[in-house]
Length: 507
Ligand code: GLU
Image (tube, rainbow, N blue to C red):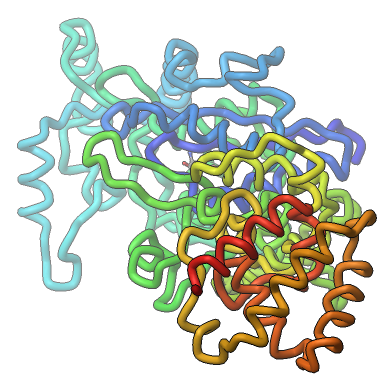
């Protein structure tokens, strides 16, 4: 690429950041890193009616959790700021007026009542919701139908008005999408979108084009749901800055759930997260669970996101961010919808838990255990526990069940299971085991097992029959890794204490 690559993620801060939004972040980030470019986050908050407190900060928290740090943003600064559109309000009007002067846009003075009347009057069976377009604009109150004097007068008296784009009739508008190839639109089907609102704020359509230009964006990537807006954006580029300056476009495929486009409702219905992190709607107080809190590792989350609409052409499924930067190409992003499969998502997490070194799990697991009331004071001990149980955990939250007994003596060991095959001989065995373990000078898996088996042989008992009660004494139930490994990590004092405790409960 001859020009420095500059890409942007341009969210409207209106709520939780869903899988599609996070994938847009990721693909932008990968592309920027691959071409040694800049990744910009621009907050598109021109629609004040959709403003949601806390949503902007939340977006940055999600990016931070995934380690996808922007080069420029509201939080990171940069020389193309401000990065929040509401703070750029003043600079858009001039472009809207330039469009009016050049004949590509016009002032529209229609009141809400007039617009309602239009929708009612022009409604037909074939066209139940008429749009303000080339067929209608000639019948409305705007600078195309009023005299110049009248328009001047209305403007001079600050009459409420908007500026609308004048969509050409029957023009074929086309552009080349990096994923979809050539895409064509019929301009007659597109309405005269508002560019500048009555409150002086630009709409998304004007702001996105002006800012992509001013911020020198070279590639504009976004979800497929924005494809219908592309003809308006292309014309704005043509009218304002010249088509040769326009960034290259790519529209990412929809993410599909069990019933078409993946929605928040699917998450609630089927019990899987759709947001990156927990999001609480400040108005309703409703909490929507996020992948983070559900127990996903950021590494796994990124990996599964990357494959929602892309693959490298081989069977490889596990990718680190560096692998992705190396292998990612826009040409390999599919144009058809990408199916989200929660079971597969969990599989990625399991693979990543197995793959990561203990040091990579120490922090999230420690944090989780502490949050759940366990006292985690010794890092070496925590590391040993993680090493021992990690392969059994699919979600990080599984660490709670799989390792809680390392941090608290089981309150209610499953005595029923022990009792069903208990006898005096076994009782004697465990008494003897305590005595022998006390004398052990080396406390390790090998010696623990050896001693256990020797004593079993003396008592003419099968070690297999003794292992289950031993496990229940240490763990509380019938699960967990190898019982001697558990005893090894628990240490002498705690192991003996737990055997004693269960024996006393049994007698
Ligand atoms: N502000 C749009 C959104 O909320 C961004 C669309 C674009 O990237 O052009 O997703």
